[in-house]
Structures are given as C-alpha cells and as structure tokens.
Image (cartoon, rainbow, N blue to C red; front, side, top):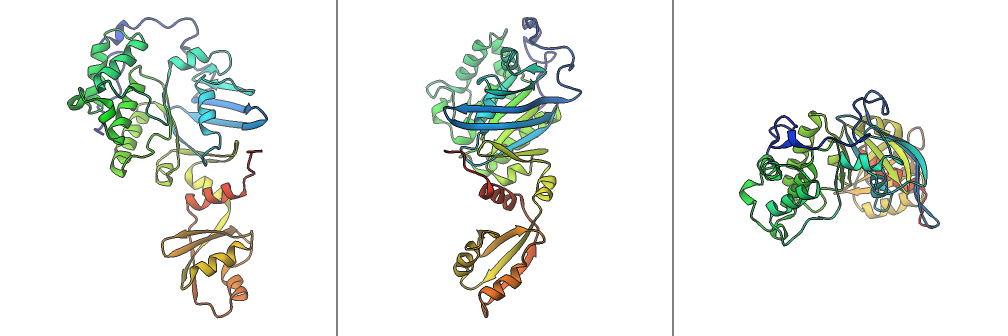
Amino acid sequence: MNAAPGRPTRANTPGATERPAPGPGDRPSTSAHEGPSLTIDVRGLTKRFGARTVVDDLSIQVRRGEICGFLGPNGSGKTTTIRMLCGLLEPDAGEGTCLGHDIRRESRQIKLRVGYMTQRFGLYDDLSIEENLDFVARAYGMPDRRGVVDATLERLGLSARRTQLAGTLSGGWKQRLALAACMLHEPDLLLLDEPTAGVDPKARRDFWQQIHALAAEGLTVLVSTHYMDEAERCHRLAYISYGKLLAAGTAAEVVAQADLATWALSGDDLARASALLQQDPRWMVVAFGTTLHVSAEKGGVDLQAWLAAQAPGARWTVSAIDTSLEDVFISLTQHATDNFQ
C-alpha cells in the first residue's frame, strides 16, 4: 500500500466543500460530551443473545488519534462490541459516548462519522474497483463523487487497477479496496474487524503503515486482531475474553499487569516435559519451535526445582526469558470462564 499523501479534508478533497451541512446534533462543534480527548468512552456495556451474555459489563476508553488494539479469542465479543459502538446494535445495559454522541440516543450521528471495515469482504465481486467506490459514494450522497473517487483511488494506490473486477483481487488488494470504501466519507473513527485475516505479511505491513499515517493525522482507530506483532503496533490494547475485559493498557503495561514469570525449556523429549507440566494447573505451557515456553505467577514455584523433583535425571535446560504478549494472552484465555452456557 502506498504511503498516504495526507488525509483528504474539506479543503483539498474535490467537491467536499459542497457537502450538505449536517443536521442538528450530527456533529458537535465542541467536545463537551466526550471530555478533552476521548473518542470512545463507554461504561458497563452489556449485550445478551437469549440467555447468553456475549459482552459483560465492558468499559473502554480510546483517545483521539490513538490506535487501540482489541484482542481476544474467537467468540469473545469483539465484533458485538464494535457493532454497539457504531450504532448497529443497541446495548442491553451500559452507557457512554462515541465521537461525543450518546451510543443509545444518537446512533445515527455516530454512523455518519464512522468507517467500519467488517471481517468479510462486503463489496460487489462483479463490479470493478472504481464502480464499487462510486456505489459507496452514491450511498453517502456525496457531491462530486467522481472527484472524490478519483482522489481515493490515487491516494490508496488503486488507480492502475481501477477497472479490475473486485472478485479477481487478491486478499491484500481486497483489503485495500475495503479500506478505501471506509475512508470515502472522511470518518473520524475507523473500526476495523480483523482486517488483515488471510493476507500476506507484506500486505499486512503496508496496511499498518497506512493506519499509522491516518492516526498521525488525528483519525482514531479501533482494530481487532489475532496477530501479536500487530498488537505490538498499537498505542494501547484491550483484551476481552468470553465477554469480559481482562486487561487494558500499553503493551508493556499489559505484560506487567500479568505478573508472570516465563522460562524457555529445551532438551530431549519435550513431549514428556509438556505432559508433566500440564498435570499441574499452575503452569502454562506452549510449544515454540524446539523449545517450550513455560509461565507461572511470579513468586510461585521455581521451574528448575519442580522439574528436578518430578523427573530426576532428565536432561532439560531451563532459561529465564522475558514474558511476551502472546504468553500473557494465552494465560488470560486459559484462566477465563467460558460463557457458552
């Protein structure tokens, strides 16, 4: 993805000066409802489907211009939360604001200022890149939509492929087209639901370069992801599992909050070592190539001493290592209570 030449504004986007004025309450002129810098500020957010609580008393704050990584296993409630924030779902409990608007009473105003990129490609396979963007511009009722589409094609490096059918694009190019469609109306908040699933590492890297360029211009981004290298690219993180927020903060803060000690275990017959460790619930064991990463609460049992007692004479090497985000998130998931029932 090409580097962004600058986020379009009403002053430099063709036709944007002709955009109809927002209706009453569509776009507050001050941030009186959201505090000095919070784009998202919700408390006690809860959503139930039947007897199952999918999002349970969740509170989250995201500052303007911040990239917040929203992490958690499949089925943890991330997509449901995102849909409540942008006004597509009404919460059963909770309150707060998004872009200064009440999430319950002003969902229409929120929708006008949000770009939402769903998990699955949602544009038309039998239309070209240009035709898809023109369709989206029509849906928004944008004046001089041809000029806006041309500027977006150029900005996101899509001009050379403008006539290519969307259904023939690779995963990375579909991702770029979907982002272009989200940005046509110049949103103030970008909600990205696992946007890089199924794309190659270079496309993921280019995508994140684009996101950071947009955030530097003041766009707020909430992005759900399963990739730990992407999590580390975010300014702040929020980890949700089975509907509950388990950790929040910068990557360093989340690791520190976990208060885990971690070791690398190497040697012969690691399958035996893993089986022994998994019999004791104090240990969290994950295979990493030719080693095992073993974590436990700090101040608990020492791994070297425990192995010596359980398997005298075993030839395993234990080395203390830094706890990674992946170690923390696996630990959080393993200790969370499943809400399926």
